[in-house]
Amino acid sequence: MFDREGIEVAREIDLKAVDTVLKLMDRRAKLNGLDMPVKAELSGPNGGAMQVGPVGIAELRNLIRTAGDPDNEEDDEPVVTDEEDDTDDGDDDTA
Image (cartoon, rainbow, N blue to C red; front, side):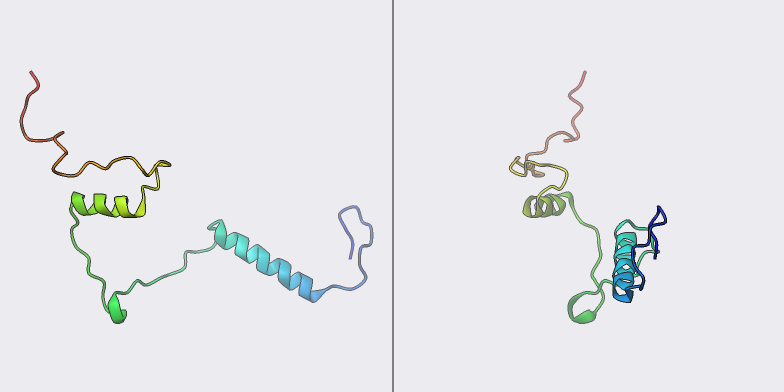
């Protein structure tokens, strides 16, 4: 086996090393999204169907408060609830 400059580096091929390199290349391709997406199925309790339905803004805010906002490095900022949110109260106070 020769390197890029044509210098002999080995007389035998190490099949274990070749297998390891191929596994690493496959892993890197998956991590970089180069392969076709893997199909995954989500299931609910006991393998049944998941309940999907509309979610209110209050529940979303509660989930963000619980899990932390991934877009915000400082998760300690207060979250405005529906009761505190008066940005769209239906009144046109602008003149």
